[in-house]
Image 1 (cartoon, rainbow, N blue to C red):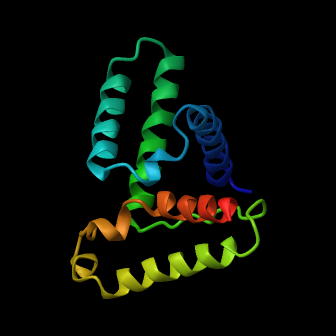
Image 2 (cartoon, rainbow, N blue to C red):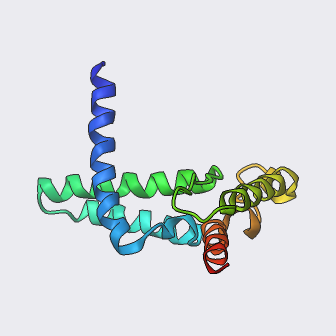
Length: 142
């Protein structure tokens, strides 16, 4: 492994550790919140980095900025999470896959999604995880 790959792995591990801590507080809310919120959060992290007093604080803020960038990048790229369905009741995996297929089909036909630098329409981005979790909850009550 070359030094660049080693550096990437070390930085990615720092990002994962920080995200693990934050996930306990916020869950996966970055998947459904407004993209403008994520942009504002990144701007806030940049300011926090600029105001850091110690080397340790600077390093932490760099990781926070990178995590914000990861969230924005994935949301803007149309990231669809692979949800763990191992604990789901029978049949919910099929419903989840059907919903993912519907969303992907919508994106293929959405005029907003096709525009350069577009974030698509609300159906392209928002509520994906919530919709899929709702399927799980419905199955659990059946």
